[in-house]
Image (cartoon, rainbow, N blue to C red; front, side, top):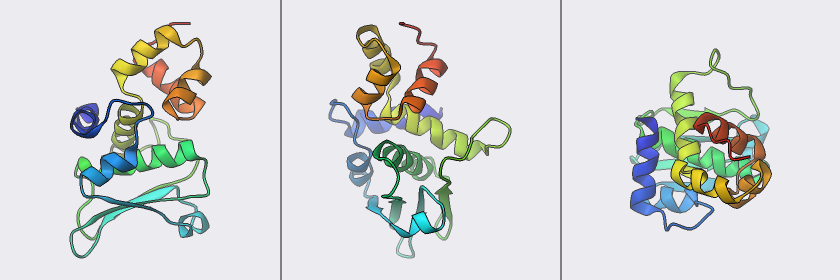
Length: 161
């Protein structure tokens, strides 16, 4: 179900070229996305909220690696599109926290699943894995971290190597 939201977003707004641009997709939904340096001082990778006028906003930490910024934007987009955030609420993504099944809240896991499907669409990963011989090269093609791609291929059961 979670990945269906991401697939719907891809079907509606993705131009078909890699890497997927989560900012363009968010903007197509009328969501403002911008870098917020203050997130670095509070130890957050990003956040999302709906302002007092009802406008959805995603902010990300510009001091983190670009691959992390992209995943954070996609993660926050997932929160907004799945209806996790209501006006007056705020969701944030902590930097480099170890997310495991025992700690992570269901909404955070769902947002991570959304982000993985948005940035690394299952069908495209499966096709690309037949031609690209390593996780690092796949990660580079999709402009995600090697860790994110490693989790993705493992979770999809892709074992082309």
